[in-house]
Amino acid sequence: MRNLMVKLKYDGKDFCGWQVQNGLRTVQSVFQETLWDVLGEKTPIHGCSRTDSGVHANEFCVSFRTECSVPCDRLPLALNAKLPCDIAAFDCIQMPNDFHARYNCRGKQYRYLILNSQLRDPFLHARALWYKYPLDAEFLNAQAQDYLGMHDFSAFCSAGSDVQDKVRTVSQCGVRRLADNPDMLEFTVTADGFLYNMVRIMVGTLLQMSAGMLKKDSIPDIILSKDRNKSGFTAAACGLYLNKVLY
Amino acid sequence: MRNLMVKLKYDGKDFCGWQVQNGLRTVQSVFQETLWDVLGEKTPIHGCSRTDSGVHANEFCVSFRTECSVPCDRLPLALNAKLPCDIAAFDCIQMPNDFHARYNCRGKQYRYLILNSQLRDPFLHARALWYKYPLDAEFLNAQAQDYLGMHDFSAFCSAGSDVQDKVRTVSQCGVRRLADNPDMLEFTVTADGFLYNMVRIMVGTLLQMSAGMLKKDSIPDIILSKDRNKSGFTAAACGLYLNKVLY
Image (cartoon, rainbow over all chains, first blue to last red; front, top):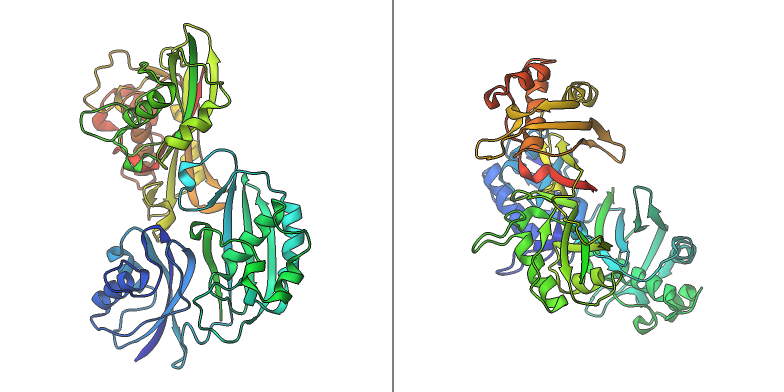
């Protein structure tokens, strides 16, 4: 019995997030059907996190135990041959017996893309937030540094979460304009864990500071308030990518 | 009565090409419906070329005459507010009275994208040709230079074309690996005009030379043969982008 980890990429546009939900097309339900078909056994699978409807993944890790003897270097190819065009497997690694994609996760990096242009781009539909008003990447980057460190991020957690401990440690955070497309802004954040909608509220808060609807340098006060009403709006799911999973 | 040119971008995946066809979703039919709605008059429109089903455009030019007084800098925004997510207008210029987007076109540049990786990429589905076998960009680039110049490109024209004169002048042609994604190869070609499927057959010919199914350095002989049976396969539409239109 091997314990395997498979890495996936997916375009979240036509998925109702990761987790199985009755009657809805989710990444977990589509992936596990294909995996069970390839392995010939209905083994339970564990995802590294739950992504919301419309959120994308450049790297999403799944672990499962299997009796199947398919070699690790063959499994992604066998899966890709049967997976639909919006999911692909790109790696498979044999892990220690007690490894679990969710419980062993030490941290994650998310990426949030903003198309900052007066004009829509058909190639970025559902793949970036379209934001028409001018943005200053250096200003946003300077403000984003206030997210760094260990804080109670209650003000950056949507209602509906049943998580008790809302302390998380942000180890990296930044905003930059992409070199190959100056209309694109990229927000990246790395932390040991994330609360419900945390990245999207972080982005919405920066955008509202840029627009003057929230005060400059107010992130430390918003964090201290632990009040969701003090932070900004929840930026659209379509701009968000789970980018790296750290073990 | 002004004569205007509007520039469009579109994701060709869900369009049956440019030209109006009964009962099919085409770029022309969707765009002219929106334009007529915005202008308040059913003016005939002229596209710079016909793109095939599934082919994309980073720049496609359309000209039309109008009595409507909407300023040029407002028209793209007014159109974008009503166009579907897979088309956007990004420029509008007033042209001389006798300008026609197709007849005045002096040349075009096409771009063809190839995902050269063992693994599929969900974000490039329907946006690049997926080619699994190793490709040598320098070899392909060297071979592509044989397309340069004025030639009868009959060997690079699909059956079904009623064009008589098949002489075209290729002024630029090249293959390179993209700096920001080494799994991506880009073929670009600029000419004064293109025959039916010409770019896709040029790409298919290079890929078959790479695979050893066509002889190295055989492009001059294939051109001289004027025989479609001597050139390579027609590479898939999804990798092709109309990139620039020259006036």
